[in-house]
Length: 351
Image 1 (cartoon, rainbow, N blue to C red):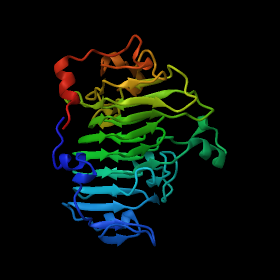
Image 2: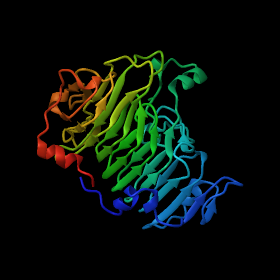
Image 3: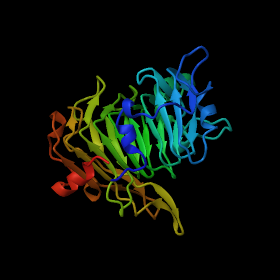
Image 4: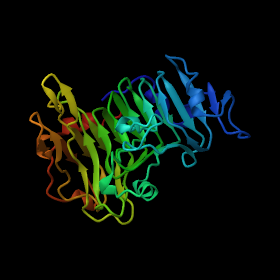
């Protein structure tokens, strides 16, 4: 995987950051660096030139906004990683302002659809809580009218060379949707419950914490981390390198799978069914795995076949790899493939 377009500048850390900002987003009375001031991140993004670069400083506080980045080479630097938070609470089954369901892609707090996006020192969160929504609406979670998918960050068509450093991506189901281009997550925290890192993009998560969260009390505890939908002709999918796989208190030992192969339903001349050109790829290389990881490691995932039925795609049919795992969760009879030294070095190499 090769990430170009200024990756080194961001990975150099704050000392390597470019001086000055094109936009400073701060609340009234809040101090900040020099630059044109805005009172919302959306207002600042609206002024970004199509080709960039455009550098934004985002002040501490919770910014309740639902945004899309459509300009190239936008960078966002938060004031403090622990206190600078971009949050929205949409979910696939909830209604948007027009009265229609948000859907999975529409639920994203932040959607990137242009190349060269970079962010550091902030939290990107989808705060949707299915338990709270069930109490508010009176619905039983099993009777949910839509879906509990709630994306925090989506890398959509048009995104490429995305880099997040020292950032948190927080959610529950489907937190991080990395569906296009290349991306690097360096020293980040990604949290969720089910399929919370998923999609068809080429993504390297390096030195990150991958935290499994508790599900609602009315649902079985446990879950699944990755759900790649990598194209069969694409070598790399979701790569976890030197990551720590942790869990919130209360998650049973052996209850969380490393991944399952997602075959998304798409339209074809002869109908709608699971895309046969997707063959999910994920690899965990030199990762620490807590006791919550299932001994089998990987599990199956159902998809729609051409005849309208449901078939289970087994992990052995996908491209799932492990190498150098440590910790109590790294033991067991795995449903994955070995990885040769050359591929291991190639997939885990820093861009």
